[in-house]
Length: 213
Image 1 (cartoon, rainbow, N blue to C red):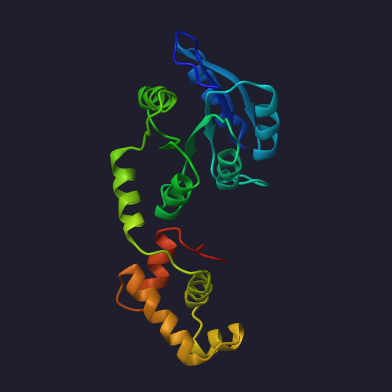
Image 2: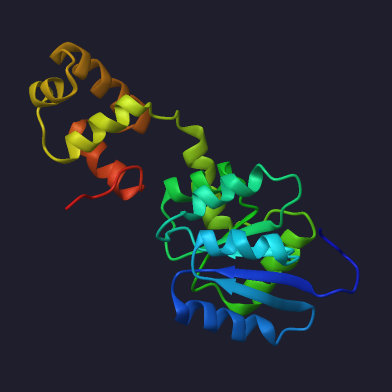
C-alpha cells in the first residue's frame, strides 16, 4: 500500500476536533508531495474510510470518544496491510507515549509541532522509518526501562491516589493488609520512588493513572 515513487503521500487525518482537522488539512494540503485524501472525527469513521480509500500515513489523535487512538492502533496492527501511523496529540505523558509505540505507532508528535517538522515526520514514516522527537524518545526509553505494573498494582495505585489506607484497600479488594503492603512495596520499587504518596503523585504525573475527580 506504500509507494515510494513520485506519487504524493496520501494522508488521512483522524481527530475529534473539527478545527484541528481543518487546520491540518489546510496546512498539509498545500505541500508538494503530500495529499490529504480525507479526515475522520472518530476511530470508527477512520476504519470505514480505510476500507475504501488508499492511505499511506494516518495522523491519529490519541484521545477520542468511542474507539481510542490506542485501540485503533491495535486494530490496524492486526491487518495484513495497513497504513503507517503518526500519533498527533496534545499530551506527552510517558504512559501515552509508551502505549502508542507498543501498539504500533511509527511516529509521535505534539499538535504544536512546527510545520517543517511535521512534514519531515510524514516523509520519514512513509519511507519506513520511525520519527520520535529526541526529548520524547528519551522519555520513552526511560519508561521502557521500568518494569510494567500489574493490573492489581494499578488498582492499588488508583486507591493510593484517593488516600486509601492499606486496610481500606484490602477490604475493597478482598485481600489481606499484608498482601496490600507487599503490593505497595513492589509499586514503590518499580516506580523508583521513596513512599506511597510519591508513588501516587508520580503515577499521575506520568499518566499511568488519572488524577480522578
